[in-house]
Amino acid sequence: MDLNALPVMEFAFPGPLRDQLVAAILSGEKTSTTGLVLDYELAGDPLPRPGDRTAVVDSDGRRVAAIETTEVRILRLADVDLQHAVDEGEGFTSVADWRTGHESFWHSAEMRAELGDPEFTVDDDTMVVAQNFRLLHTA
View 1 (cartoon, rainbow, N blue to C red):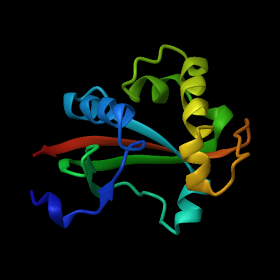
View 2: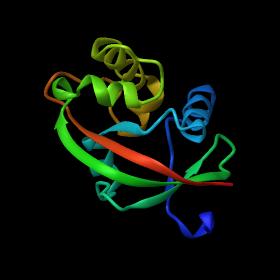
View 3: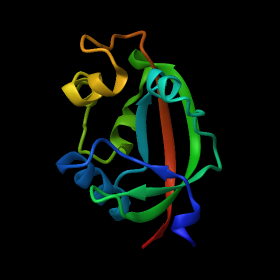
């Protein structure tokens, strides 16, 4: 599989969190991810669809794996379920823990800068993209 022929999918920002997430993808522990619908809208990117194949990049921008989207759900933040949280591969054992971790990321200075809103916050009605995927290939 030619990873260079695939569009790139980035998990978090370069650094320790991305390194952790990429390692979890490569080990097979991480099979889901969650993004903000707003982030896709602001970037002008289409929402993912089942069957989409993307290259996962590490903190150095190297393409290290290919994944295929298997399921996409658009839902309120309050409606994310435990199975999705567990499938994120970050050790979450409750939706509350998952939400705390994700809110910390979404409320970070980096994410607020990315969204162009220094006061951005999420709430129960924030729309998210709950995406499941499978690992196809590693570099």
